[in-house]
Length: 349
View (cartoon, one colour):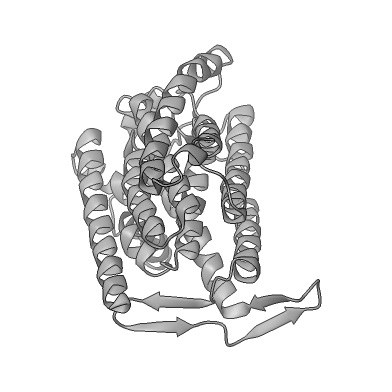
């Protein structure tokens, strides 16, 4: 819609996506919260979590539904979607639907665990696999992993071509890498979503950087999607800031994580995104280290995992943990973007 009016100003369209998604999120969220409260649909808090979080029991959840609706409407208003946009949005929305089913299961059965871990992983791997195959065969994404200033690793050395249509290539090594990356980001963002405003704030920072990277890569529509996701996170923060009036749930966190991973594939920043999303990686690693070490020694490395709970146990207030993690996320994003930018500049030269 607006893209036809401002097609000579692509930068403006990317910036415009932020306030549009922000405003839509802030408009739709209050009635959604009222609906959830009247329907007694609320968060189920884990008994083994911090005791201070028990007061959050019953807080409305599934705010990710409104965030995704706002993003889709923003894309319709601001841009003219390309095939890449449709596939990117499909991956995000289907992952959000998986999270929604998980959230609904928790609410219906009144427990903190919804789908089984195996069920969620199967769904996430299926989405990641389809996205990777489509990206490679229809969007011309090379099965390589560029590591700035080091090497461009070719993971397309083991390929199977299926006799479908003109032939569907499956680069197995790259597919495995992308599956791990996308599923890992999904669950890393999901693990980060444990404090009021933590996931929304950190994802907002990361998506702003991904929008800049996509724009510099001449990928206008993915840049608009990233900007819309950032705007939705900002709008959601109004209601999710401590003390939260609503949580995004797995609906939001899994979708945002998948969106981050898919954007990395489209912009060929599969390695750099690990630095940009370094906070998410740290949160996921803290859980993996804790589980592995506890199984072997019956002792804990951290007072509690994920990492943000460790600092709560050390006496930091929830807001202090959140703000400091925002700062760390900003530092990681800045380092990752600087690395990408310097590499692209030298490559262009």
